[in-house]
Image 1 (spheres, helix red, strand yellow):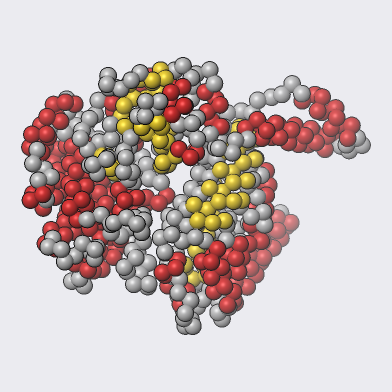
Image 2 (cartoon, one colour; image 1 turned 180 degrees about the horizontal axis):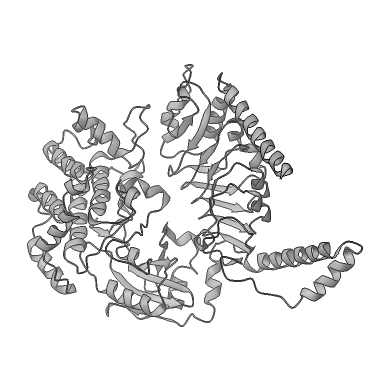
Length: 619
């Protein structure tokens, strides 16, 4: 008891000493933190200009770096970096080694970018006091560094959605403070160490991993022979040491064999599990589409080569495929569906019959062993997000009539899902990334119905939200309190999309806002509205071209969609009606009154609009 007490007192004193050192360092500003940020800016390619526009070092005042985008300081008036958060900025390059100069930093978030190369083997020396490290959704490769075990303060470690190989270092079991850990969607192999985090989702989609909480590791017949060799090698030691030696030899031999077997620089090694299933038929919903087999999908995507990836999210990875006759398709490799094969086929039959001019057509599906693939019609002009925010210098920004057309068409699609289907379909992950554009720039909603597909126990109030990290800016504020998805939650998310269309800004990064502003798009709009300057939010490329009144009306509709009280937001049907009125002179909706009843009849969705609206209002 006394020894335990001494141990605990010692740990407390050590922790107190460390934080005392950090606290003392805050009493003056050091140039190292400034050099740290300069190094990051110089080492990373910044195509969107977030760092180049915000990180201006021509300033000698105390705390000036604390106003940089993504930088949080220990104190706002001192140049001492606490956290760096640079997620979803399209940054490119290797891990910025110069970050070691931010010696007192405790949090680093570089997620959802295009970083590559290996995670530094001396990561614990670079980030000695880190409590939160998020490198997810990048292109990091190589092994997970063993030195992470020396980051003893770490609580959150997120490495999912990369191309990491090798085993999970057993040394990570030393991270007793760790509460969140994920390495899902990598190329890892070997047994899973006994870590505090045992959720299967944390390790999903690493075909070489085994052991709790995944499937047990298979035994090998070479174990006794290995034991004899190991015993001879360590003769004279205790029986316990012999057992340890046998385990280690067995472990490393197995990892080595699996590495050689599964090493696949293209990242498509999962397709090897489909050997023998290439003749599996693809169930098609449209007779006009030619019959296909799994072998056709493999050939069309070059065995699902990484170069064919056109999108990725929590529901799965989307690939472009081109058939022999030149027909282009989109094939989604679905992740984590909890349904049985029979339930999955039933859900697919339902979704295959959900057809509307503003929905991406689901052409068919394929179940091959553990893999589930969805086949969609290809959308030539990609996502609204890419067309709105990633316009190349040689391309012209989207004009107002096109933006209005997209807004009206998307609203029509979402209104149809909410009000004309029984049971209604909530999207739960609306963003500018889920709105695709065909060859005529007609908006098509993707991923509808997948939230239900990913959740085996589902109602219209499902708690599943299919949001990847960069899409958190679309989540309604009430969801963080209730964890319940509702129609008005969809309305809030769509309101963000409408704000993107009329302002040209991104949900979480407002380029036109002052450097001191660190909020999101909705918060910026709210500030302008309170100051009577709401018109200043409108994209300047659209102003002064004879449509200013339409722009302001559109902006007001968007603002109503993101009102904090959910009951005060309009329904999807009301949004569609309002936008249709704004675009009346463009003849975008001249056929709507004919098409809407026809669409209802095609699918057999018979719910009355007035009933749906009353239900919405009660929620």
